[in-house]
Length: 412
Ligand code: MEV
Image (cartoon, rainbow, N blue to C red; front, side, top):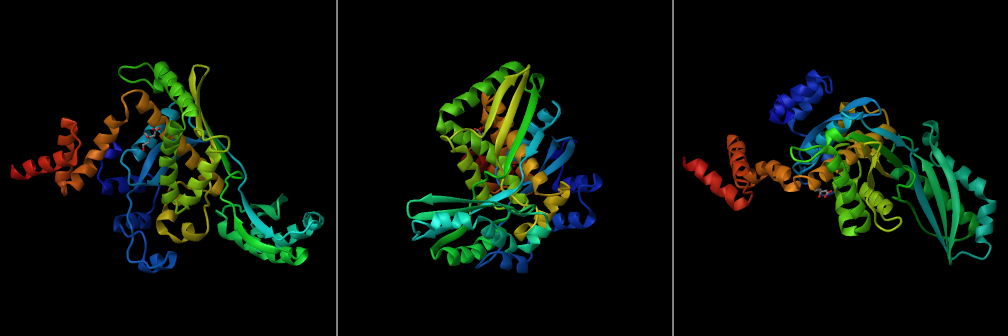
C-alpha cells in the first residue's frame, strides 16, 4: 500500500509502528490541536485563533548515511510528493552528502558621530570589547558557544562593529541581540559616540550548508525520454537560470518550497530564512542557488546556501508540533537539522526540474490539486475523492467544472 493511498489515521499508525513517534505523540496528531490557548496567547499578540496548515511527511531521505522521514508543513499540493519523489531517485543513487559550517550568527553595532581617532581607539580596545561581549551571555559560553570574531568597518561618519557569534544549537537572534545591546553600552562609554542601533544580521554567511548528490541516469528516465536526455535537459535549464533572473527566481522558489515547509514544521523563522537565502542568491547578481552538471555519467547536483535555523529555544522549544518534528527525525542539533533542510531543498529542486523538462509541471501538480479544488467546490467526505477522480479523468481543472461534477454527483 502506498502512503498516499492511506487515510491520515493509517499514516499516524505507520509512524507509530515504525517507531518514529510514541503513543503520546500519536495522540497529539489525532487531537488536531497544535497549540493550547495559553501558548497561542504567549507567542504573539491580539490572538483570536490558531491558523492551520497541513502537516505531513516526506519519505526516502538518506542523508550522510542516515534514513529520515521529514515532517513538512505546507498548503501547496505536490510539494511533499515532490520532495519524496526527488529523495527516492537520490536514495537509489547513493543518497545525499551534506557538509555544514559552524553556526555563526553576525550582529552589528552601529556608531554615529564618530571622531577622527574613534577607529584607532576601538582597534586598541579590540580584546577588551570581545571580553565584554563574551561576558554578556555566560550560559552561551557554558554550552560551547561564544563570540568568535570582532571586526570594525568605517563608512563615512559611521562605524560598524561586526560580531560573529557561535550560537551552537539556537537560531541565535535573542542571544546575539542581548550580547550586542550589553556590549554597545561599553562601546559608547569607551568612545563617547552615540549608538545608532544594535541588531543581528540575517545574513546567513556563517551558516552555509553544502548538499551534493550524484544521480544515476536510469533514475531520471520517463516512458518517452532516456535518463541521459533528461539529465542533459536539466543541465540546460539550470544554465538558462544562470542567464535569466526571471527563471532563477522560480528555480529558487522550487528549492524554497521544500526548505520553508520543514522550517515551518520545526517552528523556525521562515522570514529569516527567506532573507538569508535571497541575499546569498544575489551576492553577485541574482543566481540559482543550486547547480546541475553531468559528471562521470551521472547528474551531479549541488546546493550551497545558508540555512538559518535552530533546534532549541523560543517557539521551537515551546510548540509541541515543532518538538514532534525534531523527535520524528531524531535530530541531535542545529547542524543536523540544517543538513536535512538543505537536502529537502535539493530534492524538491530535482523533482521540479525533471518534471519541467519532461511532462511539464501541470500533469502532476493539477492531479494533486484536484482534491483541494473539490473541497473549494463544496465536496465533503467521500465526495472529495470522487470529484477529484472525475476532474483527473477529464483533465479539466477549473473550479466551475469541479462545481458541475459535484452537482452531477449529488443528483445521481
Ligand atoms: C512551483 O511551486 C515550483 C516550480 O515552479 C519550481 C521551478 O519552476 O523550478 C515548479
